[in-house]
Length: 317
Image (cartoon, rainbow, N blue to C red; front, side, top):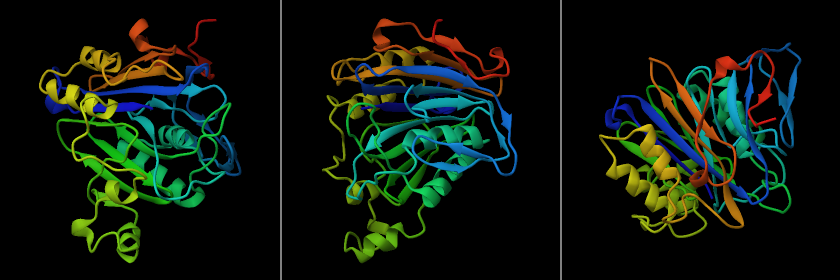
């Protein structure tokens, strides 16, 4: 019920990296963008995530996050080092757990602790290994899933996909990439869980790393080689490819407001928030919509430097 996209500098109009995400949540749930300053903690400090408490790190980074108000974690966001992350719900053959870190908790932890896209990815997979992912992901009814992530900084981007404890990450080296609510890495990725290929071989799902297909093996339903352009996944991919070489912030806005295939979602699930970020060595810019239906609202610029030393909501008072 979400879509994330990235356009690398080689295909953007002015040479920056552009990230965008629509956060689709149950209708009526409140989501707001908040700025949290960098903070220093004692060696014994802990952090209360949505369902579990884990040790805190000595120093966290300043972040902007778009957060469903009932949870600790975030659907998407950016940090002071120019790292952006968005997550997607995915359904896999691995069992879900009743408690653990939500995918949204992992987004926030990756932003607060990761000084680059690669380091944020490492933060997420280490926490996944230590604490697992799990817990109810909705405020008023039961919904439990695994997660995929799009992680980027000014120079590179990664797709990280998970199935329970297992994971595969693919570096995006050129062009555009988008993720939706299905696993999409069709091989063993660039890096991976150290035991995931052996596990699949032992289960009889593949014979070697050469025929290992993470999405096909671990998805709970059929994975198409070419998503339909009438689906959200296919529509976003199609629009990204159409705009290679001329991709801009305005392109990202247009894609995230698109109704063909339900990219801008209306109904029992709605697009409750949206983010677009432009990352470059000349400076990062971030825009958020924190109301349902980005088709009906303007993206508002948000700066990490303009909100002082205390956590602050960006919702109108």
